[in-house]
Length: 146
Image (cartoon, rainbow, N blue to C red; front, side, top):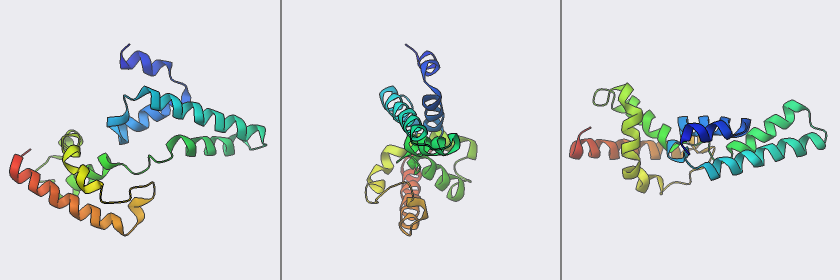
């Protein structure tokens, strides 16, 4: 079954998560088991919250938090940010998303040194990560070009 047919079978939460993954974690967007499990969990959270008296809006907020837990920090978006901010002359902004996908495997060693979590972008460690990624991209471009 192709991706378009599969995405048509997802629930509201599944479709929302699929779109979110395509934009922020493209390497996970094809993991239908992950998407279905998360979507089912979010639906369960919504239902349970409503049964416990939460308003529809409150239940939806809890369901969305469960759906996106652990996905707020994006390695992909961080690399794109580095490319846009530090290498706009070398990598045209329109090419940055595709180039970021190419770079991600080379960046894994850098990412592994940091405790990445949902709020990591707002910690002091993010500046160190950003600096290391900038250096790694500079070396990559010097050795391989675009």
